[in-house]
Length: 226
Image 1 (cartoon, rainbow, N blue to C red):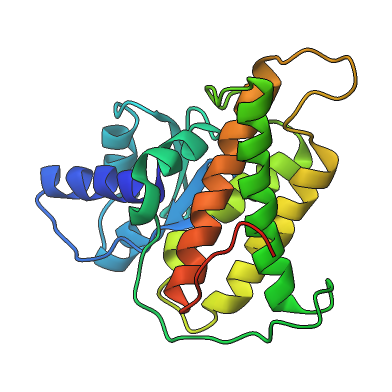
Image 2 (image 1 turned 180 degrees about the vertical axis):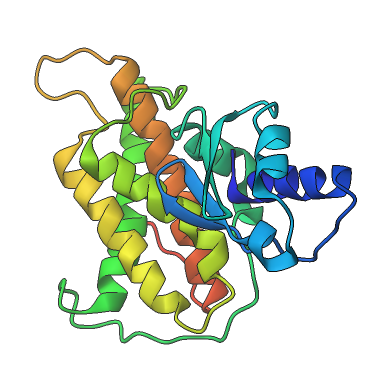
């Protein structure tokens, strides 16, 4: 589930309870876990909302802590597939243009780190196609780096409305670099393609889309080759 889908489910539960708000204040807490203070904000029993949400497909459980809702989705990795399906719509907001220098092309330059992350994600897709690795269902993404990246992908829609968005985009890029370097999406040596490679190929494509959207939002044209 995307953050938008979780928000929509929460708004539906509010409507069923006879209440309506323009924004539920949803934010991603970690991979596959979202929090909302909406029940506290409007003075509604959070347990009522929790009970309604637990029957929504894709939501595994809802916990209440002092009136704060903590919503856990069934499969955190499915966010990657949902982002691929949404494409250019994911996380899109109009933000203030931001400019990073093109050089130096080293990791000391934040702009290079973001652009290079996009180029790396695009390269994963090209090489995966060459090797016959097709993106697959993103299950089993349990490495620390993979979960961190999923968490960042889940945060993107919230950050897109803030002036600090370029800083978030840099964190997203660094998260992808960590996955790229420690969780290979492509078979190594004599290794045969498997489900883990298909899942990581989907995660890489989701990161590529998110980074592409983010670069466009700050006024840049994503480049697959630097």
